[in-house]
Structures are given as C-alpha cells and as structure tokens.
Length: 148
Image 1: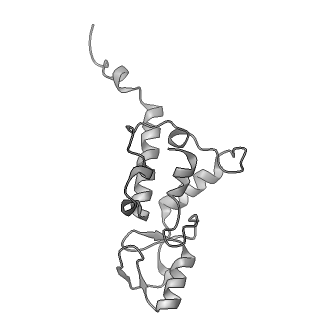
Image 2: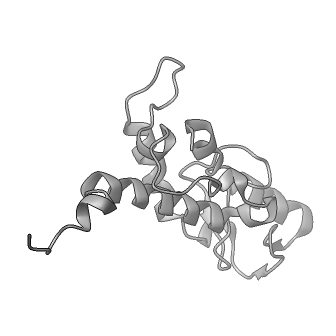
Image 3: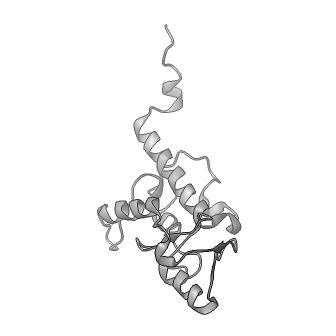
C-alpha cells in the first residue's frame, strides 16, 4: 500500500477532505469532519449519519473525538517528511506488507470503505507491519522448538 492510499483512508466520506483532530465519531462508529456534521444540522435541523442514516440525538459538540484517528494523525505528523512536503511513511505504506496480493483496501468494493472500515483496515495494516518488524518470518519461526 503506497502513501497516498494510506492517507486516503483518513478522509471524510462527505466532503472527501482529510480528517483532522476535530473529527467526531457518531454512536454508529462512523467518523466525519466537524464542519460536515455542523452543516448537516444547520440544513436539516437534525443529525443523521450520512452513511447509515441513524438518528443522532446529541449536539455535534457533545460527540466524542475519534481517539484512534487522533493518534494516527499525530503519528503521521511526527514522521519525517519526504521531498514533496508530505509525511514519509514506512512499512505498509512504503511497500512492505504482510498481506497477500489483492487484499489492499483500494481493492475492496467502495461500499466497504466507509469510515469505520477505513480506520479498521488502517489499524490492521499497521499491526501487520508492526508484527513483521518484531517477529521472524514464518519459515524461520517454524523451526522454533524443534530439536535436531
């Protein structure tokens, strides 16, 4: 998965802009930028999830931040930048992936790329990369515990 694909996972599905730390998570676990949620409330006088249409019975300000998203954004912001001024990503974003070919998020149907799925897919990719760095490859690990 390249850097741009990884960063695409962090976008609001309403305005298609990059989510930031002001993004809010709805009770249905979909995440949107605060501005889009406020625009929905001002135009419709109620808040329904743009993805699943569940009615949200609290004010936008009362909705919690998506803590995982905030941490991911902070992590991306702290990474060294590449020549294009964007964060230089390692691991899965740089082409190191433990996933078999054809399992990239960009290969999933568009309907499965909604906000919670995006965040979950990103979390899985980051975990795969972490495990790949920390654990020996399977052929090497399969010899553990065997006596010669």
